Image (cartoon, rainbow, N blue to C red; front, side, top):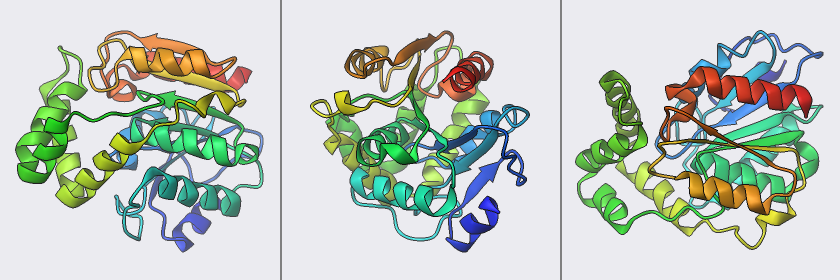
Length: 256
């Protein structure tokens, strides 16, 4: 059983059902910096009637053992190792922000292990403003509050913002700073065009952290990819407008 194998490997996860059905597509979700599998709750629970849904905790996050990787290549290798060990049939991969960068790396390294990819609020280059990098090191909690303020659309529920800040603070300053630094070094602009897998690109129309212009660059670079700008949503698009988001995801997977 897939969930038993994950537990034996020390990988934390959230799933819609521990009983994976062979006749359904499987969707594996990768969170971004300072998050964990919980950010995909509106996908793991609301898509479980049609898909096998599985959200993973990256190493050093949530319930996964081990230390965070020092760069995104390390996370991609960790993901590839898991895909190879656990799945007899290639799943779809969906990654948000840093998770989307990790999925791009995995798709470039081992496309045969993947059925298709969904890139959410990400880009082929993830430049981080120096003020955020410095702030995460020097004044962690205040900088997290500022970052999370930018992560949601202007009319987002304040409770969502508070919960997002709490989640990132729980990861700790060393982990979050390390991952934002790794994002800042990420750049596959010269390579991403080699991705030939079915690809859906999703971005909130009010995303201030990875604006739609980055998703448009991905769309222009990955041949045959499909771009959807989701209304009434910021960087946390899969939470803010989960209905429109999930509709796009289901349509893509069922017709890939």
